[in-house]
Amino acid sequence: MTAMQSVVTPQAPIRAAADHAASLDTEALFGETVIVGRSENGFSHVVLATDGYAGWMPSDCLGVMPDATHQIIAPHSFVTAAADVKSLGLSHLSLGVRLHLRQPDDAGHRAAYAEIDFNCTSGCVPHAHIMPLGAGCDDWVTVAESLIGSPYRWGGRASTGLDCSALVQLALAVAGKPVPRDSGPQHDIGTALQGIDDLQRGDLVFWAGHVGIMQDGDRLLHANAHHMAVASEPLGVASRRIAAIAGPITALRRPQPACGSAERR
Image (cartoon, rainbow, N blue to C red; front, top):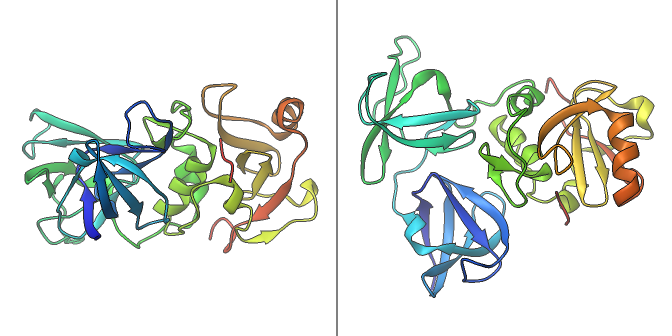
């Protein structure tokens, strides 16, 4: 028997088994919807509604929430108890977190804070940090660039720590362009390019088990274990280093529309 529930913690691990010591496959963010199946050892088997990723999540990360209306678009945000800069901070929120606003979003008269549903009560987030779901943006690479310096974390999917394919998925999702979670399926995004001379901003470069985002025709942005962070560097420098470990570039892809428009890590 299955049920739809929401993630009610800032982020929730999805593991390979119902065990806190099991490997981290990915994470779900606050406000995301999951299909919940059987329970075991304090965990629930879940399937993420956003991308179909399945695994085991601690059951206490799940609850019931109203449908999300907005998302966090700042690299890092926070929930406060009241609409005041001096108010008690309740929690950190990552880029991409989904929220339900309790008050209509009146673009003509925006308060400094928006009231949201948060853990069976209410909280406030800075209005400058949110955007209506589905609003999208023209340059999704700008979203990815806002995460430069964020820690690298295998299986991570939040601005507090993420891997290479999560950087691609999270930035595109905030821009209103859903894509698969892992770099293997991400090979099918958009259209294939013939060679590196064709690369432009927003194109994706793949190696075995790794993916990066072109900032222009020369620079690569990627979450990687060499820098242990989201970093920007010349494609040639990155490619030579990665080739020594993972081999040559395996694919060049252009998401559609272009910018301005299984293994990962």
